[in-house]
Length: 228
Image 1 (tube, rainbow, N blue to C red):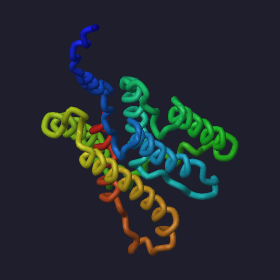
Image 2 (cartoon, rainbow, N blue to C red):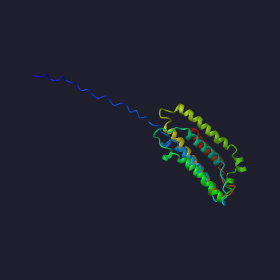
Image 3 (cartoon, helix red, strand yellow):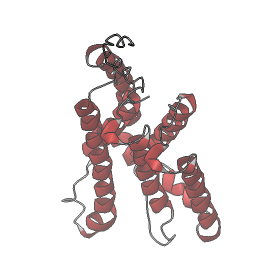
Image 4 (cartoon, helix red, strand yellow):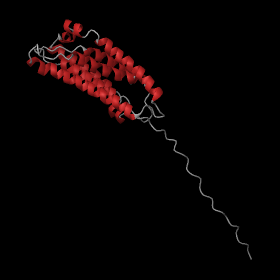
Protein backbone atom coordinates (compact mmCIF):
# COMPACT_ATOMS: atom_id res chain seq x y z
CA UNK A 1 0.00 0.00 0.00
CA UNK A 2 1.53 3.33 -1.08
CA UNK A 3 2.23 6.01 1.49
CA UNK A 4 0.35 9.33 1.18
CA UNK A 5 2.21 12.32 -0.23
CA UNK A 6 3.65 14.59 2.43
CA UNK A 7 1.64 17.72 3.22
CA UNK A 8 2.84 20.63 1.16
CA UNK A 9 2.27 24.07 2.64
CA UNK A 10 1.26 26.68 0.08
CA UNK A 11 3.52 29.71 -0.10
CA UNK A 12 2.07 33.12 -1.00
CA UNK A 13 3.68 34.74 -4.04
CA UNK A 14 6.06 37.60 -3.24
CA UNK A 15 4.61 41.13 -3.54
CA UNK A 16 5.31 42.92 -6.81
CA UNK A 17 8.27 45.29 -6.75
CA UNK A 18 7.46 48.97 -6.27
CA UNK A 19 7.05 51.01 -9.40
CA UNK A 20 10.30 52.47 -10.59
CA UNK A 21 8.72 54.86 -13.10
CA UNK A 22 9.94 58.36 -12.15
CA UNK A 23 7.30 61.00 -11.51
CA UNK A 24 7.79 63.91 -13.85
CA UNK A 25 8.02 67.39 -12.32
CA UNK A 26 5.10 69.71 -12.91
CA UNK A 27 5.67 72.91 -14.84
CA UNK A 28 3.68 76.19 -14.68
CA UNK A 29 -0.05 75.78 -15.45
CA UNK A 30 0.53 72.08 -16.04
CA UNK A 31 1.92 72.78 -19.50
CA UNK A 32 5.18 71.44 -20.95
CA UNK A 33 8.36 73.20 -19.86
CA UNK A 34 8.85 76.55 -21.58
CA UNK A 35 5.20 76.94 -22.63
CA UNK A 36 4.48 80.08 -20.59
CA UNK A 37 7.69 81.72 -21.75
CA UNK A 38 6.77 80.81 -25.33
CA UNK A 39 3.35 82.43 -24.87
CA UNK A 40 4.86 85.57 -23.37
CA UNK A 41 7.45 85.78 -26.14
CA UNK A 42 4.87 85.43 -28.91
CA UNK A 43 2.56 87.97 -27.25
CA UNK A 44 5.31 90.57 -26.89
CA UNK A 45 6.62 90.00 -30.40
CA UNK A 46 3.12 89.87 -31.86
CA UNK A 47 2.42 93.33 -30.45
CA UNK A 48 5.64 94.65 -31.92
CA UNK A 49 4.96 93.07 -35.31
CA UNK A 50 1.43 94.49 -35.39
CA UNK A 51 2.69 98.02 -34.75
CA UNK A 52 5.45 97.75 -37.34
CA UNK A 53 3.03 96.36 -39.94
CA UNK A 54 0.62 99.29 -39.66
CA UNK A 55 0.11 101.23 -42.93
CA UNK A 56 2.66 104.00 -43.49
CA UNK A 57 -0.02 106.72 -43.43
CA UNK A 58 -0.67 105.94 -39.79
CA UNK A 59 1.74 107.79 -37.54
CA UNK A 60 2.60 104.92 -35.24
CA UNK A 61 5.30 105.13 -32.63
CA UNK A 62 6.37 101.93 -30.88
CA UNK A 63 6.33 102.36 -27.08
CA UNK A 64 9.79 102.40 -25.58
CA UNK A 65 9.27 99.29 -23.47
CA UNK A 66 8.58 97.04 -26.48
CA UNK A 67 12.10 97.09 -27.99
CA UNK A 68 13.61 96.48 -24.55
CA UNK A 69 11.29 93.56 -23.85
CA UNK A 70 11.89 92.19 -27.34
CA UNK A 71 15.63 91.89 -26.77
CA UNK A 72 15.09 90.43 -23.32
CA UNK A 73 12.50 87.78 -24.21
CA UNK A 74 14.31 86.64 -27.34
CA UNK A 75 17.68 86.40 -25.63
CA UNK A 76 16.25 84.73 -22.55
CA UNK A 77 14.01 82.29 -24.40
CA UNK A 78 16.61 81.16 -26.93
CA UNK A 79 19.34 81.02 -24.28
CA UNK A 80 17.24 79.03 -21.83
CA UNK A 81 15.88 76.59 -24.41
CA UNK A 82 19.32 75.90 -25.86
CA UNK A 83 20.84 75.15 -22.45
CA UNK A 84 17.91 73.14 -21.02
CA UNK A 85 17.58 69.41 -21.31
CA UNK A 86 14.13 68.04 -22.05
CA UNK A 87 13.36 64.90 -20.11
CA UNK A 88 12.58 61.74 -22.01
CA UNK A 89 9.00 61.69 -23.20
CA UNK A 90 8.36 65.36 -22.34
CA UNK A 91 6.41 67.35 -24.90
CA UNK A 92 7.82 70.51 -26.53
CA UNK A 93 6.43 73.91 -25.46
CA UNK A 94 2.69 74.34 -26.12
CA UNK A 95 2.62 70.77 -27.47
CA UNK A 96 3.79 72.09 -30.82
CA UNK A 97 6.33 70.25 -32.96
CA UNK A 98 9.88 70.77 -31.82
CA UNK A 99 11.35 74.03 -33.11
CA UNK A 100 7.94 75.55 -33.92
CA UNK A 101 8.37 78.56 -31.61
CA UNK A 102 11.75 79.45 -33.08
CA UNK A 103 10.32 79.05 -36.57
CA UNK A 104 7.39 81.35 -35.75
CA UNK A 105 9.72 84.00 -34.35
CA UNK A 106 11.94 83.95 -37.43
CA UNK A 107 8.91 83.87 -39.74
CA UNK A 108 7.29 86.79 -37.95
CA UNK A 109 10.31 89.04 -38.26
CA UNK A 110 10.88 88.01 -41.88
CA UNK A 111 7.25 88.74 -42.76
CA UNK A 112 7.25 92.16 -41.09
CA UNK A 113 10.56 93.19 -42.64
CA UNK A 114 9.55 91.93 -46.09
CA UNK A 115 6.20 93.71 -45.90
CA UNK A 116 7.76 97.01 -44.87
CA UNK A 117 10.51 96.92 -47.49
CA UNK A 118 7.79 97.37 -50.12
CA UNK A 119 5.20 99.32 -48.16
CA UNK A 120 7.13 101.50 -45.72
CA UNK A 121 10.93 101.50 -46.10
CA UNK A 122 11.23 103.98 -43.23
CA UNK A 123 9.46 101.71 -40.76
CA UNK A 124 12.48 101.58 -38.46
CA UNK A 125 11.82 105.19 -37.55
CA UNK A 126 8.90 103.88 -35.53
CA UNK A 127 11.44 102.31 -33.20
CA UNK A 128 13.42 105.49 -32.65
CA UNK A 129 12.76 106.75 -29.11
CA UNK A 130 11.54 110.31 -28.81
CA UNK A 131 12.96 112.90 -26.47
CA UNK A 132 9.74 112.62 -24.47
CA UNK A 133 10.22 108.87 -24.07
CA UNK A 134 13.78 109.22 -22.84
CA UNK A 135 12.86 112.08 -20.53
CA UNK A 136 9.82 110.47 -18.93
CA UNK A 137 11.20 106.91 -18.74
CA UNK A 138 14.94 107.28 -18.13
CA UNK A 139 15.04 104.29 -15.76
CA UNK A 140 13.00 101.89 -17.89
CA UNK A 141 15.96 99.74 -19.07
CA UNK A 142 17.32 99.69 -15.53
CA UNK A 143 13.96 98.50 -14.19
CA UNK A 144 13.62 95.78 -16.81
CA UNK A 145 17.17 94.47 -16.34
CA UNK A 146 16.92 94.81 -12.56
CA UNK A 147 13.61 92.91 -12.47
CA UNK A 148 15.19 90.12 -14.51
CA UNK A 149 18.09 89.87 -12.03
CA UNK A 150 15.68 89.93 -9.08
CA UNK A 151 13.79 87.06 -10.71
CA UNK A 152 16.99 85.02 -10.89
CA UNK A 153 17.71 85.67 -7.20
CA UNK A 154 14.15 84.93 -6.09
CA UNK A 155 14.20 81.70 -8.08
CA UNK A 156 17.36 80.56 -6.32
CA UNK A 157 15.88 81.37 -2.90
CA UNK A 158 12.60 79.65 -3.77
CA UNK A 159 14.41 76.47 -4.73
CA UNK A 160 16.19 76.55 -1.39
CA UNK A 161 13.04 77.16 0.68
CA UNK A 162 10.06 75.79 -1.25
CA UNK A 163 11.35 73.17 -3.66
CA UNK A 164 10.58 69.51 -2.99
CA UNK A 165 11.45 66.29 -4.77
CA UNK A 166 9.33 67.35 -7.76
CA UNK A 167 10.52 70.95 -7.87
CA UNK A 168 8.69 74.10 -6.88
CA UNK A 169 5.06 73.89 -5.66
CA UNK A 170 2.38 74.13 -8.32
CA UNK A 171 0.67 77.10 -6.65
CA UNK A 172 3.92 79.09 -6.67
CA UNK A 173 4.60 78.42 -10.34
CA UNK A 174 1.01 79.10 -11.40
CA UNK A 175 0.80 82.44 -9.56
CA UNK A 176 3.95 83.65 -11.30
CA UNK A 177 2.68 82.47 -14.68
CA UNK A 178 -0.77 84.07 -14.37
CA UNK A 179 0.60 87.38 -13.09
CA UNK A 180 3.04 87.53 -16.02
CA UNK A 181 0.37 86.66 -18.59
CA UNK A 182 -1.94 89.32 -17.14
CA UNK A 183 0.94 91.81 -17.29
CA UNK A 184 1.39 91.18 -21.03
CA UNK A 185 -2.35 91.53 -21.55
CA UNK A 186 -2.14 94.82 -19.67
CA UNK A 187 0.58 96.01 -22.03
CA UNK A 188 -1.65 95.01 -24.94
CA UNK A 189 -4.47 97.09 -23.45
CA UNK A 190 -2.02 99.98 -23.17
CA UNK A 191 -1.25 99.72 -26.90
CA UNK A 192 -4.97 99.75 -27.71
CA UNK A 193 -5.38 102.83 -25.54
CA UNK A 194 -2.51 104.60 -27.31
CA UNK A 195 -3.79 103.74 -30.80
CA UNK A 196 -7.56 103.93 -30.44
CA UNK A 197 -8.58 105.94 -27.41
CA UNK A 198 -5.83 108.46 -26.79
CA UNK A 199 -5.94 110.14 -30.27
CA UNK A 200 -9.56 111.17 -29.64
CA UNK A 201 -8.84 112.75 -26.27
CA UNK A 202 -7.76 116.25 -25.46
CA UNK A 203 -3.94 116.26 -25.10
CA UNK A 204 -4.20 117.88 -21.68
CA UNK A 205 -6.67 115.31 -20.31
CA UNK A 206 -5.11 112.21 -21.92
CA UNK A 207 -3.52 109.83 -19.48
CA UNK A 208 0.14 108.98 -19.97
CA UNK A 209 0.63 105.55 -18.51
CA UNK A 210 4.40 105.62 -18.23
CA UNK A 211 4.51 104.14 -14.73
CA UNK A 212 1.98 101.49 -15.76
CA UNK A 213 4.21 100.47 -18.66
CA UNK A 214 7.29 100.33 -16.45
CA UNK A 215 5.63 98.17 -13.78
CA UNK A 216 4.13 95.68 -16.22
CA UNK A 217 7.38 95.43 -18.19
CA UNK A 218 9.21 94.72 -14.94
CA UNK A 219 6.77 91.91 -14.11
CA UNK A 220 7.39 90.24 -17.47
CA UNK A 221 11.15 90.61 -17.10
CA UNK A 222 10.93 89.18 -13.56
CA UNK A 223 9.24 86.02 -14.83
CA UNK A 224 11.89 85.38 -17.46
CA UNK A 225 14.55 85.80 -14.79
CA UNK A 226 12.72 83.46 -12.43
CA UNK A 227 12.45 80.77 -15.10
CA UNK A 228 15.93 81.15 -16.57
